[in-house]
Image (cartoon, rainbow, N blue to C red; front, side):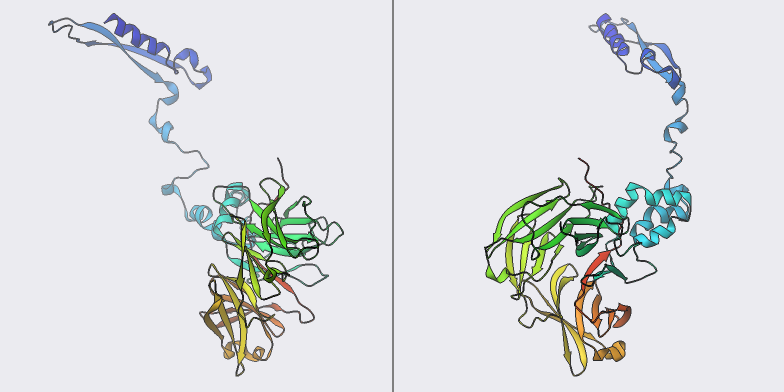
Length: 422
């Protein structure tokens, strides 16, 4: 029995909350020892018992149970939330960046919340709507066409915050991929909302003017820092072949893929491509699509519709790759949608003449299909958004007719983009 008492007293001495191990600033610790009689039967003999001390500890720091469940002042329990707290915590992350910049003026609390890294990360993952298109005429500065000027916008659409003039070449989920117009042809990745940017280090291969690029960025709920890749299809000198060089923001370095494209159908490429759901797509001048699997780093060839035209557009429609081709018959325009791996005709979207009005006489060019039901097209001298379900047209901007203009769908997001720090 004495051994049992000694063992309990040793455990008491090793207890991490004994007074000699507690900072005096955290409150005095009082030890109350009460003696209780525990009858232990020893070998079954009646009446044999020993006294074992039972120890209990009370700290003045925890004298009240209310202190243990009290929330910090900056955290509100659900039952204490008011409507503005619900909006701030659960609704703001679904709004575009321009609207959120206005909401910063509501209060200092909203300003701190919207500027916090946690909220920036949350908004990047929740807001994915195409907000407008960056466009650029050769030799001129970029500009931005908003699908809703009240809600969507950027402070400097000419990208004058970058250290040198650039050409916009690719876009993905709120980030733009640009290239310097100067002799070094440096690549830049930037977010025109936050005006954050990164200069990409010089690649290992020579990137000539025929090099086609695509930016790949998928917001990840587990990564606060934006992780993106720049995929470049590079023509090899004196060879009818393409090699793929990939820049990773995670390592701030380039790697040359082992994949080499020797198919003549892939040469040459018809401008830059785009990324969606793990794959990069480039249209070729020979009427095919070069597909690059970014995870496995393998490539393939998909044929375009035989009726393809310069006014058509390779784009994404409701998450699937498709080709949009304008078609006019009896003074009525329609958009033919081709899809699947064989690029067969999937559906035809009629453009109602009563919605288009006098624009029906102009030339139609498909640009993109965005936000599940909206066709972005140029018709005559106008860029319009045509809502397929409602057969309703909205004017977006005037269109340039004196040359070929590039258009890049853009998401009004707060996603982070900053120089690399090892």
